Image (cartoon, rainbow over all chains, first blue to last red; front, side, top):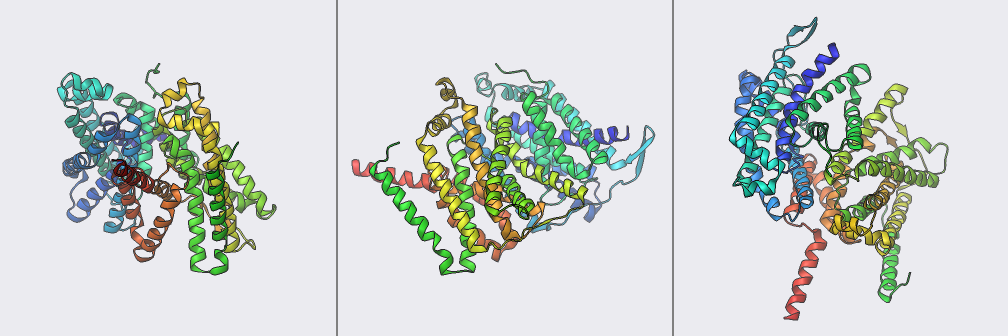
Length: 288
Length: 311
């Protein structure tokens, strides 16, 4: 029971990060491998804000989100839009964007290393125990989970019950046809990419309240987010959330019963299972 | 198989070039030989990488995983088996591992493959670390009488084998099938090519070669531990070098390996903390400035020169 709740709490934040990536890949068609670096940057921002001005990470996210939004919008407009324009087919765009975002990811790590050094950073925010169903958990974990649920819920409502949300879902389903019904694919793709980056950075700020990060941990989160997105199905909000919770629970089980060093290996076994048996995602329909 | 005059001439030139390279240890035994080993290692890795990724456009980041497995084969077996058999064994294990990875991922689109190979080195590293922690063993000592020159010759021999394999594949039915897959997979599928089988078969080549390279280089490290043997940066360096040179020709990666090795050498000795930044910038240069690598650039220039002559 203890493990289950810890896993769900972790999975909530994972869901947030994976939602960010899913917006970027599902709508803007960019497999953003620099996603983890945006996350770590969000974490650094929260760390600096907390240690220098005692600003609560819950308030910091309102600063992190617009900043990350602007940064990701610029990245998409300046660096990725040309690739979209030049690509002759989906495969070429995939290869190009993978290489370009690898470059961004390494540059991100390099910049963070030279500004902040390679040390782990962590701070103690709300590290007080909270009792839930007979067991105690860190208040920061519970708070992060609640925030993640709120943000995921808001995103879900926005995507399903607003006009821009409808357009974005249309692009995710059929990018070529979306243009024909008068949807501004270019602008909305940039919007979705920027929004995805903002969500990821907020996830980073939240996760930094209870996990220790360093400049080069980004890639681990990128991998986890990718596994979640593929497991949940590209463009599928519900699938992403369930996949994230499953991964959070599995990781906690492996970490507490087997060895904390094997969490990524566990995620990989899950990934392999998905690739072999359900490559279209947990709830995806088989393509004919 | 019939050889034309150009083929025979090219083969002679290649043999001569290898013979000249093999003389390096007699000229210098210190800095330049060390650099020679690095270049020979990356040439082998990048050329075998491009054999698979050039025609198929799949970006493999599994090099570090296979390499690490190779070093562990040598590390575990050096006490009981002769060195040459360990290199062969590493190649065999690398090929089998590559086949398994290929069977799981190559039926699907390229993204799955990239993601899977991206974490593969980390996965194997975690498992080995876990096994070592549970058995109480820490690292492995590799003590041989193989010196730097010996390693260099082994690598050079392996590089020759890789070039020969690449040349033979290019002339075979498999090579032809792969070129069609690279141009248009749907067309390839419809003309009766078993695309998944061809890709898996070809992916076994870089897998085996990377594992053998790791096995050969293990004595250079002397002490092997997981974080050293499975350093993920190796995979990225190989990708950059191969694409910088150009993956469309057999000799393309070589053109990328030499300048990038010197660049990294210069950067890591002067600004040791900036290597990640350099790798990042190199990726962007490849995507935005040199999409076909140096080979692509050369092709473009040749095309323009020829066009001028014709008009």
